[in-house]
Image (tube, rainbow, N blue to C red; front, top):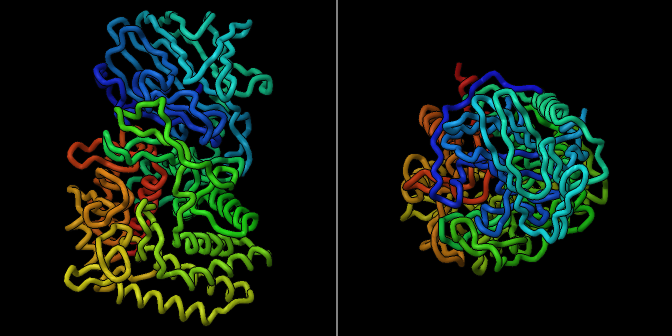
Length: 606
């Protein structure tokens, strides 16, 4: 069995008063098919199987009484600490009480010799939990409490759990005859538990071998990582986290592995993020390619272009198979994280009109071609139609990047991404010698850029507005220089950055996406500060030449990660607590991309 020599962070006391663990106390494990979250008490509080968007097998994060969990812990635990095995998402939790200490190593196993860089299944469909005694004599309790179970049938190898959406099997090398058991470990003793949802298809392997093959697969994959910039350890961990959100069979990337973790405690802004947004994934694959992970970028780009070719029209978000997500529904049986109802499955944004998707897909196609990909004639014909749609609809109302649930508005960001569609379409046609209105697309791209600079500008506010014609301020405007629509040093862009810092600032470099009172989104309540927007601010400051300010902000944002290096979607400004679905791909993309940008700027200035 491979272990690390680093002791990790110091032990910290556990607070037993709250039924719901803070999100910052959760570690992620994944296998490129699904993911699980494990809290500092050694309890698996989230797992959907067999894949990210399946029904949950454990979801006590959304209902501490009825959601289900898988706990292994000493009966008298007082302190805990967590760390990752280096260069992997294999999680180590160490628990200590007055009678001694134990180590729990958790992973979703992968096949021996699996190549994680390929768009092919790698996961074995099983959760491995290894328990080792570190000191003293420790009594432990194992409790397996699925969300939905009609029967638990003991057999010669363990227990079969049936009645839910998927049948599970629990095996162990300590005696078990049901879903609860107690056992003891002394220093040097070991016990293992394997929860499998692929019964009868796997060759049994010793737990130590399963762990070693999983560690080996991840460490072989991460050798491609190539980064030269600040906070290299945090960037490396972010890249591993993004990979753990990559659905390997197709190349789709989920926005987050969870559903309905609230953007404000007690609020209704709770959404299902277990799908692949073209927008989010486009940012992700661009960042991954920049650190040497081109195969992930190619897999996703191939996937989204194949989905476009199959459907003939773009979608805002897709299932992992590239199809339309199920209708959004609320779950009346779960109370929500810390009573933040409703719990939602599915996502209604899939049926919205969001014009930025034209630019996202054309930018994906441009990346694909720039790195050696080709475009067949039928696919190019569909891309041409998207360019023409962008040319026609760029100033029509839509629901925008933040997917408001009001009537549409002519969002500036959406218009900007239509400009991107025209620009990338012209570049593609010229580069490949393809048929298209190259000069006309260029002229209209320039016309849209000029319209944004003119029509979105509000003189009295000294900033661009969230939609053409003025009204509201939106941190998505920070993305205009990043998508090469408006130069970061343009006086109006510089002024807009300052307006966003002043009016959307939440303190300590945090930013709200927008203010619902000024920019109605059809929902009650409020939300936390959106981390990606702060990373966009880093990029703008750096591009303006304010590198010292940018670096200081970047360092502070990296410091907001939990001890495992994981980031949420949002931060609660008064407390620093994590909010929203977790861990969030967008936030980790921001950390990676801003680090790359700062590294290149500082290297150039030497």
